[in-house]
Image (cartoon, rainbow over all chains, first blue to last red):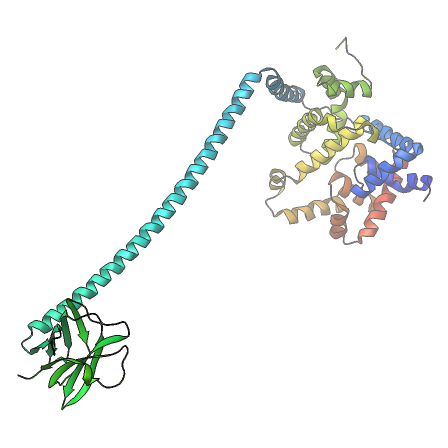
Length: 260
Length: 180
């Protein structure tokens, strides 16, 4: 397309009247920079458009000018006061700065407090949980002691005094409730064994040994042993740790008759 | 009024850039009737048109720095500000609500339909020229120039291909050029 064709394509009018697309505008402006005749055509159309508009004036309403002038004077007045009176502006902006600083401090303090409270809350929760655990453990122990006490005071409970054989210092009491079958043992004194050895309690029922449980020695401990409904006698032996076989009667430490 | 100075466009722009009140007063006196004429052709309501005129002159005062003399005459620049402001007003909520208590979409259609079928209400200025155009051109110029519809919107509105809208508007403008 040569420039004359371009000029007469309607682009000039389209551009001047604001109907051209952004791409068309850019192209038109680039063409104007290269082609003075295009600028001339544009200028001619602009002039005729202005002339046309001037032939069709409508006087604006009275007072419109005053409103506009006061509006722009207000805006320019605020502009000059901004330029001249540095102080209020700085004061305002430093006020704003203070507000901003205060806001940041508040934010940081708030964040810190939130963090602190969060941690405290977490700690309290942990403490509460451990207290609850301790409480549960105490409850359990109390329950156990109550059970033990019940057994010991129960008229159906048989107390068997176990004493050491062959000069052994072993000393224990067995509390056996024949109705509930509960067996408790209070170890008064049982010498510590090498770590591969354990004591084992047996019930002798019709002359046959029945395992009532392995235990470590010690002093003044109450042990809950396996239950047994029947028992003619109780025996304590020393066995290898975790013994699953029968009793090693060579190592019989103590013997007590259940039936008087 | 006696000692009234007459400024050239360049002098006027230079003074406006310095925020010269007198130059602005002259600008208003010299151009407001023509601009108000255009605004009136888009926004027929006198009161609303007066609001638009105020917005336009305040915008001219504030945006004079963005005026580029290499891209066109001062009047053309102001004319486009006026046209855009008037179309914005035409499409503003209060105006549309005022027009009819109907959804906007229907309004757009009915406004368009009016201009297609109805007689030319405003038989002055550019509109008078446009009335001399062929019917199919007149509608397109009215919708695009006076109502600010995009080519795409016009294509949808009149149910004609976008390419046709574009070429017809170009032809209409070429024809308009001979009439001005």
